[in-house]
Length: 256
Length: 256
DNA sequence: ACAAAAGTGTTTATAATACACCCATGA
DNA sequence: TCATGGGTGTATTATAAACACTTTTGT
Image (tube, rainbow over all chains, first blue to last red; front, side, top):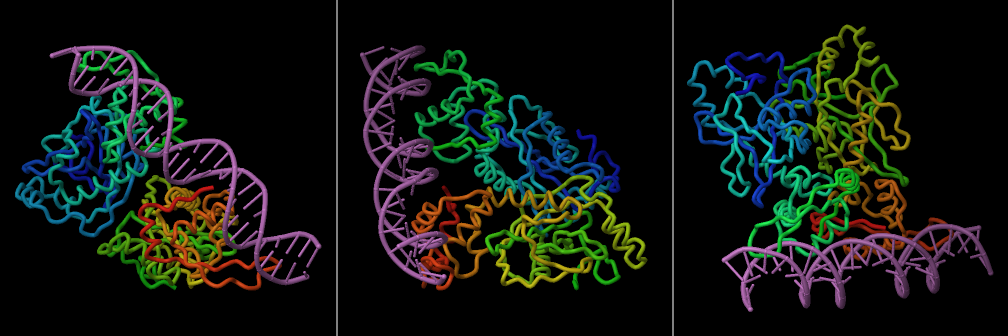
């Protein structure tokens, strides 16, 4: 359960929070060759929602996003970046959930806070799923990873927010530490390629991908990984952090 | 003078406007081989400011930006796009101007509105300077074009906002109609190249630029332009709008 | 005739792409 | 030994970059 939010417990202290402004986080992970996204399941409802929250009056917006991310994922120091601000008037269409919550007297105040018009800034985070400890907030039952290709219906315009976030990764991936953020410390070249393929949404040439990445010189080669299947064992790799970060500034070109 | 703003005339109707949220517009033009930017000069002060404003409670944020741009520049249907949302706590440091305005009793209410914390979304617009009719708002004396390389001190964090906007054009120019938006209907290849050079901040090879742009096939060649100097007369070009827009989606690569 | 700027052509270097080949492994 | 996936090499193509050549103009 969440401790710091205008809608925590029963008391609503609107004075501490920026009105009309919210944050929605698109938290991306990668496992088993698929991108995953962290979503919560709303109380008394089957509908899922992006982790989100509000901004304290004395808090930097980035800080707020960082706080929200930490509360939901248990991760600190993630890669986190705003990608778009959603300013539609009717972003939040009337939803059955809110109506249902209204019947619960001690939630009425929260609902009236939630029913104001919000302009929301979307933040994108890339994290190592295996390091995360998802936990729900005051308005949700569960918080869990879902493969992107199995994304269910989402609250409000959250589906659009996710779409925009994915476009943002596609456009900016050369300047983002996608590998370092999403992969475990050691990984195979196949993993790395699958990551690129799932972001770009298309197949890449195995041979060229390998050569390109090795030539860039930010990968350290380790021992081979035993016991996958009946085939040659792949090497494990890790990132040479300094070189990697230096190259990121110029952009790590992908190809094929 | 401006007619629709929470700070127009003397009356302040905070109920109609989103509190804590503002818009700042970086309006870019191009003339005489240089990028220009539209800035206002504050009342009772030498300090300049980006054209900005607020968002009506029943208005899409993009709409608000469009309205502000039209009020300042006289232009409708411009190329306009949000590029970043600035969420620092102390974006608006105490400024001499505000203190000065406080001494004027009928402006005191406006100042108290202005003194709240604002999170501001930056919008970038590319316009044809020659078509614009700049006009100041309720808080400014003048509104005029200034060459980017002569940019004076600006209000609050507006300098940072401009910097971020320029980085955004540099990164995204392949997907923006920089030529069509910033150049007049007919232009020389030299103009076009100077535009690219001033955005990228570096010289390009004349020969390669010309070939590249012609090969892309979105330029219509017109009559030659007489009377420049003692040299070969250059052709005039215009954009073949359909082809241009189609290519923009894929990105118009620049080079050299 | 000359300088200056415009238009076109050529050469070289670099990178993307396709795909061929050999190697290691477990069934 | 065979199928499978991993690692490396090579040929082809496309693009960027550098720069040489020619043309047109006013003085």
